[in-house]
Image (cartoon, rainbow, N blue to C red; front, side, top):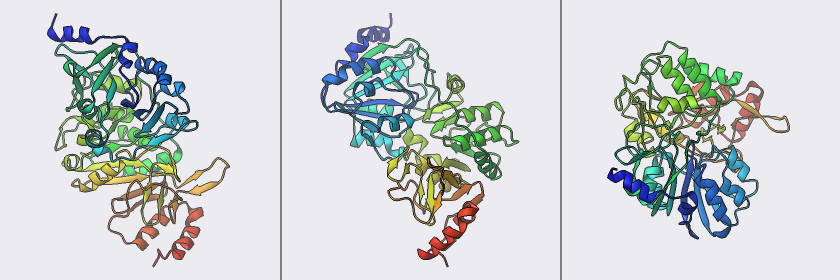
Length: 441
């Protein structure tokens, strides 16, 4: 029996024993995206009622949490989220969900310098013969959390794909406090959002702007999915991937022969990402695939690193924009919907990449719960709306009515260009409001 297997056996405990180390006041780095805790979570939930002032740090919830059910109003625990999903918004109906604003490229540094956890609980793939556990599809800031945590508890999932790095995608048994064996647990499946005709129209505009050899970053949503499928069916060649989130549409692009990564300046031939979330097709794709490289977020989203690639194309959704070019992508008024993520990072990366282009996309209108239609291009942002991308950083804005470039433009030119891609029913009103605000010539 090897030294590492002996150490593994000495640290192997029941889920109940593992969570017994949690004490009042602990900060716990918990789940993120596909990295969930189907065995530790219910065990921890049983302890929640006897604890006080526990802080749970979570991001991109993809599966309901037993600890929420055990403390639905937040009497015993505080829920800090780095990026909200529909589940987190559901939790917010009964308890406070505290969003932590972040620039994703800085997330590992936040963990090291500003909010180090007491405990890291993380799901991993089975230990290899060298004593390493692989983090599977979720690297993000977990290496930083492991460096800072006083206690590390790993939940071993036999069904976790083995994801190649990069770096920062493994934990060694010597670092681990407790090992819990979770058996075979399917990773959460994230279905593709429904693609609308508006999504397809926006995707068509962007597809015309793409060139052979472009290095892509795609956000999540119906429009990026539509674009991914169009790229897979196009005649584009030698595309690269350097992104924060790896998604199903990128697998389609690879399988169709559109993605080779040959023209990348760094990580040539490899698809770089910091977390992967999607269907089983995606998890099967990254499993032991040397063409994939998982890195911490301070590599994938760092401007100095990512912009070494030429022709970086960043494509992300937003919620609304004002006539000066301020972009909100994370809230409806003051109500948080998602989070900043890496949108600001990649808008900046794209512009600083030689030949790069950054696209921020949205439907020109939305319909509220009462059936009223509203413009997403507005004279001013909705009261309380969060500015995700500041106006000097914004490059291209896309709706189903066209593409405009705001870089280097004065306020009056920005207003005119944005009004030109607003829904026709709102253009006259936008002109009148712009004149009242002295935004026009």
